[in-house]
Length: 68
Image (cartoon, rainbow, N blue to C red):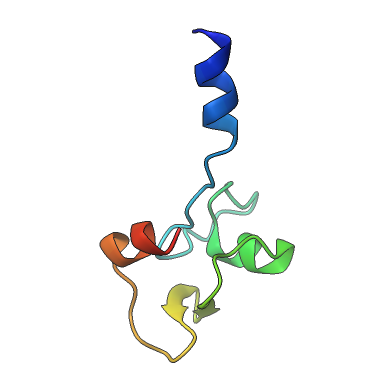
């Protein structure tokens, strides 16, 4: 892989999953872990282990991709 692609890939933000998988080790895209670290996209929060918008609406992968 050329160096240019490697540096471009590192700048891409990871999107959270729409629902927590409840694994003990917490995967890299877990919405609970991202909320705790502060890396969750703005306008999103986690309620009952599911990713929702701040106003409480459900989140789709298509809307989430646009937000990031």
